[in-house]
View 1: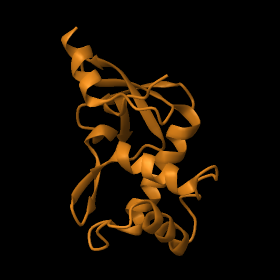
View 2: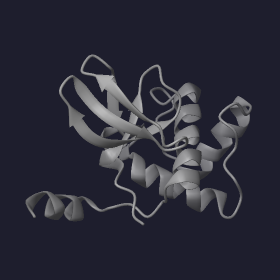
View 3: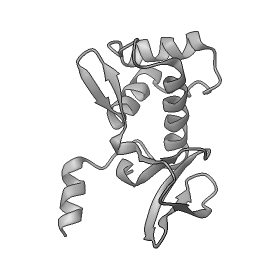
Amino acid sequence: MQTDLARILSVSGQHGLYQYIAQARTGAIAESLETKQRKVFSASSRISSLADIAIYTSEGELKLDQVFLAIKDALGDAEAPSPKAADKELIALFKKAIPNYDEDRFYVSHMRKVVDWYSQIVKYASLDFVKEEEQSDAKEA
């Protein structure tokens, strides 16, 4: 099964990732990837689609799907470090996966969040991402 990062949401103040289900009268309905419980998030909730998130590199921005695949390549068969791992361990992972990340704008706190999201995607979804062309084809159909 392919993962559509446009439908995977991060909600400020909520732990974990959510899959977008439907539009509600007062916001959005989403299901936790981990617990499968559905919640309604109000229009005032700060909701971000993972497809809209990128990290800063020396050449510009790198979309999150590409970041996840680079982390997978860097880790090989090993598990991702815990988001609570030592700063040195996270920095070493990102130096190996994305050697040109912008150290002035991509902080260890961001690395912790990306590693946490990566672990959840690996555990509850897949790293086989829907390509942008396939997303636009599905919207037109």
